[in-house]
Image 1: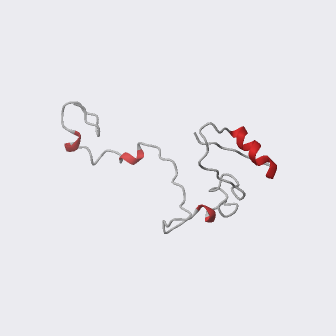
Image 2: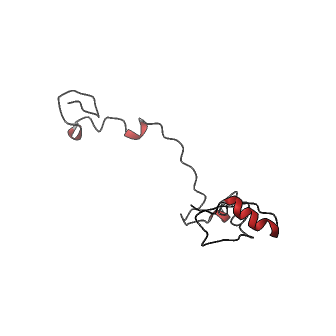
Image 3: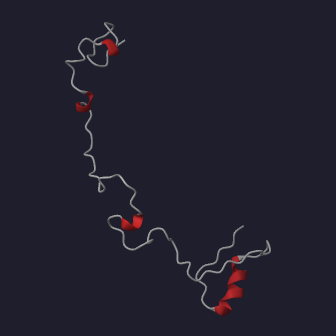
Length: 101
């Protein structure tokens, strides 16, 4: 056995090292990265829209524009995306079609 504190072999266990008071503190052995300064001193939750660098409310939460979306349910299992494009293109431009399988 080797003491992890002083490095002596077979003399004693690490927990009972007589030289533990003379050894360097463990924190000095490892280089720690500088801790980031917290932006909030209370540790309270800050929503993404109010965090530093947020562009506008909900900008990161919404991935696509769903303002003019149409959900079609109860379709035949044989229905494919081109079928829906053909059906809806008469009403205006279709930007995206998704058929769940």
